[in-house]
Image 1: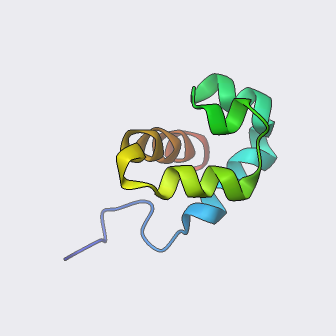
Image 2: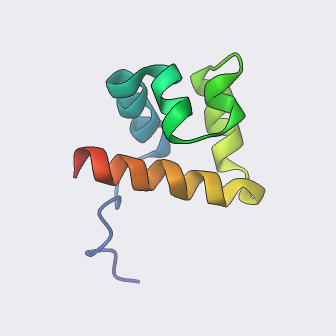
Length: 72
């Protein structure tokens, strides 16, 4: 599979989250991507667990889209 057109190729979810949290903070991030892990007692570990769950792929896509819009 060719990932040359994927702007997130080689970037770990943890790195994406750390950059977004540093840039926006949890409160603003929670407004931009409305998921509880950013709004209710937020921690990097709990956010990663939530976003890695295949049932929450929709949330991961929103986070990745925000990352691309913000940094790419």
